Amino acid sequence: TCYVFDIYRKVPKDLTQPTYTGAFISILCCVFILFLFLSELTGFIATEIVNELYVDDPDKDSGGKIEVSLNISLPNLHCDLVGLDIQDEMGRHEVGHIDNSMKIPLNQGDGCRFEGEFTINKVPGNFHVSTHSATAQPQSPDMTHTIHKLAFGEKLQVQNVKGAFNALGGADRLSSNPLASHDYILKIVPTVYEDLSGKQRFSYQYTVANKEYVAYSHTGRIIPAIWFRYDLSPITVKYTEKRQPFYRFITTICAIVGGTFTVAGIIDSCIFTASEAWKKIQIGKMS
Image (cartoon, rainbow, N blue to C red; front, side):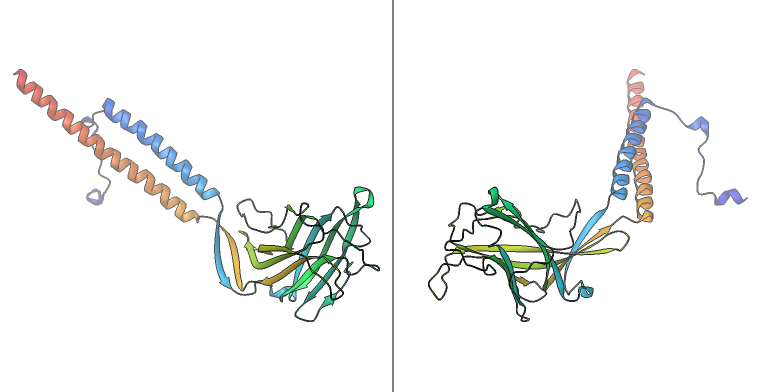
């Protein structure tokens, strides 16, 4: 008597009838289920990147420092004249920074490519390329330049994250006034990237505005420079890698299979019922 509790009742084989319509609908069902399964599988394997904004200093272990990487070419200024100066609101004032930097002669020694890595404090300030550290100031220094790279923090190489990590890369000022100073005003935005394992990497994006002008010293001489004036944004951007949970993937697959067969069964039943009714009508007309 236990079989009365069976919710999966079986239909006797002599009451089932295969039809061409049912076969066609079954094939379509399988193709549709396969398509949805592959789509869900692709979504399950793929990694989704979710971004969020919050107010905080994400890299508290940095000691209040930000790493900077600068690569700039001045094709008409000798390497002996090129120098990097750093100053900020904490009282730092460094003229002719040379640590972790090098100068590469260009144009048979008439120009210079400056490459350097240094740190700045997490307070408003500036660093600038100028002739201030030269032993003798030139009469007319040419500050036309090309910026190859200006980046802050750790380098992020993530395919699905497109940010302004090197917003000034490729900036060309070769056609500007040779005696003009250049001001690049930077707004630095802290950025965190967290992968699936929970490991975090800290970098910085930045926006930039620039202006060009001729600056005179108190003696009336023109002393141009390339200024990078920066300030930090209190907003942090966080990118997090996420993947769909396995239980949700299984639930979705079950819903796809069950829902597709249910809808297909309803359609097949309607077509079969209509076909049988039409046959009865035709038989009735013939009789």
